[in-house]
Amino acid sequence: MKIDRLIGIISILLQKEKVTAHYLAKKFEVSRRTINRDIETIIQSGIPLYTEQGANGGISIMNGFAIDKTAFTSEEMTSILVGLQSLDSVSGTKRYQQLMDKLKAGSSDVLPNNDADSIKLGRGIFINLSSYHKTSIAKKIECLNASIENYKNVEFRYFSPKGETKRIFEPYSLMYWWSSWYVWGFCELRGDFRMFKLNRIVDLTPLNESFVPQKDIPSIENTLKQGDSESIDVKICFDSEMKWRLIDEVGAEYDLKEEGGKLILTIKIMDKISFFHTLLSYGSYAEIIEPKEIREEFITYIEKIQNRYKCQN
Image 1 (cartoon, one colour):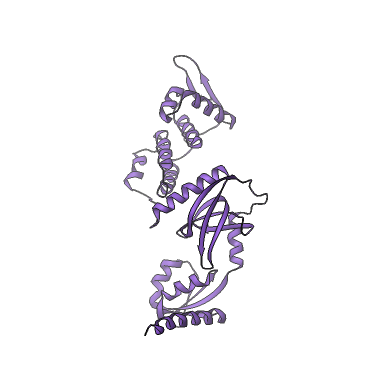
Image 2 (cartoon, one colour):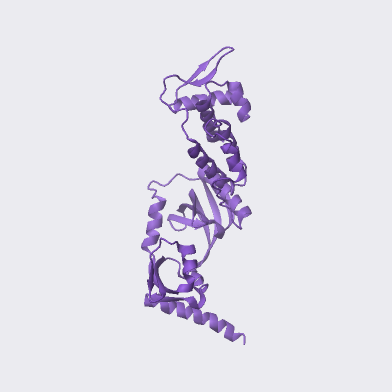
């Protein structure tokens, strides 16, 4: 990708006093004409480059330009590489690995003591965003990412607790949230912005038709806040034996109160069925206190499960 190459060229120029177009063309496996166009693009972006002809000629950042040639510290560059490596864990291509290689090549002075190699060796932080569905998720991410970059609609079938629907969708962003991948954008069926879980998407198909971005695009944060406004506060009582699991699943910093040897937790729910499924996994160690309506719905849900097993006797 062009953006990957531009970042790589800038990174190299920050570390080397002068390089030739031939060196860059060989490094990035493109023609010298392509490198010349890239140099023009970098200049237009506001970074003054100086080109010199002749035997000792080459490309360099103009003297006097106020830029720190160590734009990234060792810690900052390592963080960038860790982030790219995490994206590579769900990529169906080598695009992020190639970008990492380019950044490492131009940042040897910023990464002393083989810090670049330490990323490969697993020292420091390692983030893996893949899942049990790695193969299918990687394909979906690549398809959606291409559609986002090219403003192309996609079509898919979506499965939710409310049933199966067919959607034509304008994808705007991919996000990793609470251990799952989602795509956010404009849904033609609902006429509004929606967020869909990638695991629930099947038959994802890129369409040839392009879309013009919506005029009023809300932030993803506002979309999530709207979801919060539709949520229900539920108060649950847990036996103290479940403290380890609550800390593991909701975090030690959550407002977990201890009353009479019991643990009291208040959470927001948007999907009642998913909440019931989770609560059932606690067995007799958990009880809904309020609201009364949710408690009664949960009792009815349990009775349906009991009746299913009774009918088989």
